[in-house]
Length: 447
Image 1 (cartoon, one colour):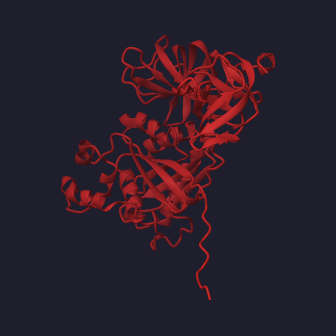
Image 2 (cartoon, rainbow, N blue to C red):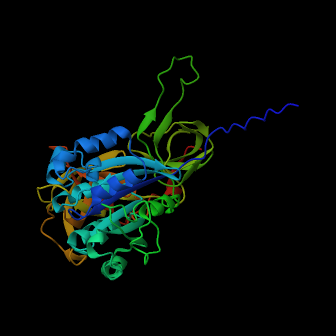
Image 3 (cartoon, rainbow, N blue to C red):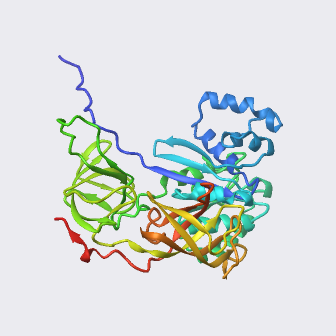
């Protein structure tokens, strides 16, 4: 009798594992880098050579023990001072999800680095020292997370072991946050008591918090729902480059002209009517190409190359949009900015504005307000914005922009300001509501 078992069926591809991008923020010495180190260490996401490097670097910080913060504090100055200066990125994965971590600085003078690390995050972890409670830097980072429209927030009340694992202290800190969170408009907030140094409630549940019935940090990161965070309404495809393969004239690819970029909103499908900007010509999608080949449809945030049915005037900095839910258009807009440069921002200054793949000259005719991070109230008509200030300004561009309010689309609603002489990035900006919109009903038809 033939006892050989039938071979298992071969699957073409394993099911996709989604990616969660998150950042850590908080005041100096709240334990941000230690928390990430503990997360990587306890989830067994470190290689043997990384553990050996930790042991070799133990003498830099004294004590002779492994300093988990050294996993992210890669600069020598960071290790010697025991602080985080630059944004450090780390990657790890569990069977349920892949993760990209941005460890951001706690010093006020490095708030601009925190904005950089949080700009692409799905989730933000704000650490609070259980002894100090909510301080101005806690409010500052929470306010920035709200301004950046990060969908999910975790308040990690760290160093609970130094307050005797007091449930009352944990509830006090939670109440302090809940006093100002409604004004920031953050909906999904999770509070977790922990000790990053000892590993309590980071990967494994702590026996010291029988009064806490919520998830561990890793448990929450693995299960928080992020699939609906991307904007799937209103097609937006900023063109990064025109794809013309360098093939012989007799090759099948000779007449290929594709428009490549990352879909910033909506769903794109073959045969769809689209509007090309700035020309305003209406055409149809002929083909959609991805890394895996030709597909029938694609959606945000996939990177694609699109072939259109007609030859249109479209290049880098242009945009392919749907006929429904058109973007804003115009040379005048209001925006909130985080000022990142030592030289203050005053009305009348000129910059370059980089929005998606387009760069245009811009002037700042007026400063409208500055956010007081102590009270979270705006102060009107400031004379200037200093480094790390958050304020609302008016902008006038040299040519029209096609954009969305940041509250509707984080990708087409954001920009940076660049100083022309030095090429330094001086501000990160969030677009306000457009005054005018693209009008597809008046567009020229190529169909």
